Image (tube, rainbow over all chains, first blue to last red; front, side):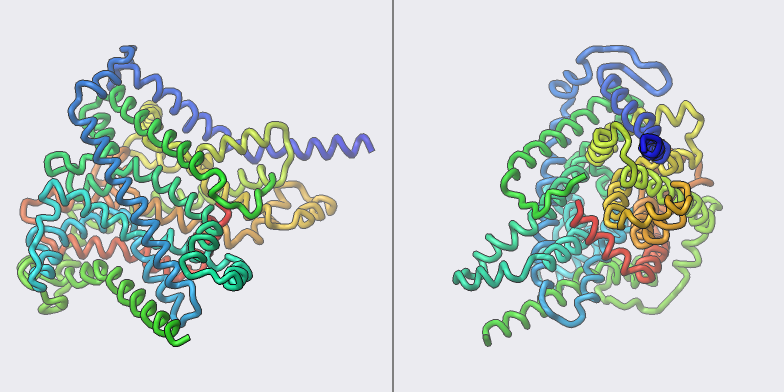
Length: 300
Length: 279
């Protein structure tokens, strides 16, 4: 008996062998770089020479000297506050409208998913740039309806919202998640609500939202994380312009690191991004405690 | 009851019309590949004056003697190994976490989950410095290494969840029959995990295929460019942009994704739905 247990235990230890690739990857490609970048953020560092400790200089420059930083910080927040709620609200509305017995639902779901498939690829960014040019097709259509034309990407007020529209357009994958969640809401909850004489809004607020709250929460967290680091769309569509009105933090990070080779300074920017993500995530967790409803806690 | 029926009808109309609007940019893109610059900017007609394929033929020739054959080949040289490595390594790691009870498993799994929230922005610079010191800049190793080492927590997590749904008796009975743990994994679990492995592979394919930032960081000679770098180059290289060529190549770059999507639609939708629910 004793012997059997120890052979069983030995077998369990084989788990280490299977997780070994990840363990190495975690240490070498995640944990050590994470610590290094924290250190770099307190140094003068170009890729050609080794880092020289410079104390808080990078952060002081960032917060008090560099006029671009607060602009980029603001731009990134506006971008996040447009795109994350925009995507989630669109996804929720379309998922609610589709959560009925109707023909052709699979075809429609596919159509809504397609923009997410191409995602923020360079091809789509270029398409957006062309469509929203001053003489582009969007202005052409507005003109045909007698509406005023806009300088979409050429105006500091509209350039960022135009980029946000491309992001919101890709709400399809969130929608598919929410539709799946809606289909899993137990029907008897709605029946019980009907018996209580609840109206459509009451049912939405008191049954639907709590039931799918884990999915909404998951989407908010992951999309906020992505939005605060966004790069490609602004870089390809507007190059951060006009007048830095779309100069996202992700883009500033890239430029400082790989155009000016100020790796230490760029690391400080990356830690501001990281700190922002952490603070937002913690606030979201705190705000959601008791509001997000988990039917099974899941054990491990 | 009647009111309900009207509501039903209105909802159908709304989502159908909105769905068509959603696809308008893609449709417009396809038709723009046949248009001259004058037509693109001067005319509102959706259909081109003639279906002229020269945008595709000229566009394929690329920039400075390097054609899109090279760019496609390069892209697949990155994407296909990355997908294979990711699926192999992540499923192995998932097996370790889902089926073995070793000391420190819980904290290690918590670490794995926490890396879901680790922003790429924060590790980008040290990783670049590391790969640079290995002499890996301008090679495809910076793409392969993270895939070989299973550092895609999203997929590991998804596969762990899937594996936990498979009855443990299956692999335990294999042990009793004298199978080693690796044999049990390959012969019993892998076949059952096909749908999940397929979903993971598909998503990794799309994300790697569409990625722009990593190729931008690591690839600097035009001969090794991926499609996304080539497309960006095509709008930067010329002062008067021949949009039909650019749109033609942008459209062609989407075709592999379209084919993949329609041939494996089931896995996409199931993949998203289960990831979301389990997440």
